[in-house]
Image (cartoon, rainbow, N blue to C red):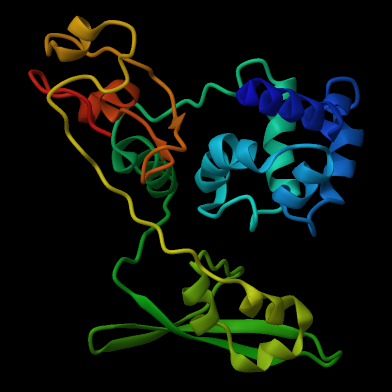
Length: 258
């Protein structure tokens, strides 16, 4: 009875959310959702009648998958954006995985596209300092990057500069003087979340829930080909790579790779 009550409260909360509006007015719903960036999903959800049990059993695993943090710390905007996508896109809840290693099927094609057009990758060079100057109107512009590899050093100049860093990395890279600007100083308010990825190989098929005999055989892969969530394990989000990315991760005679 308690579970039925909890599910009913969960349904009411979602019915009162911008997700319903997204079914008829996606743009208007997204405007409403953007205004919820300053409130946690837990606070928003419980203000609409949702329960703490629903958060722990259903929404925390989703939040961990999205941002590696729980519903008390992730914004309502982040969660509801995904819900709106699921509601308006018929296959949005089926997450397609690469059929093999990211190095071969993601970064590999990108790298090939660039090199085929004359681009080059300068590997193992580290950026030690962003060089910059100020124009006559007081605006700041980058003049180059101070790079090093072992004992070698050089200055790289370019038409445009892009930094793709983790939170600790960008904090180390940005010149301290830039903190005078709110845009850059806000970066130092960010806190990185430690993440561990673990791969476990099994001698059966973990996500085959319907047929015990099938789950124990090793002649063919079987189970759920999707990204999965659970509130009852130390890991909240997982996929069987032997099913979802079989090109590199399915091994004949072996089972699931979570």
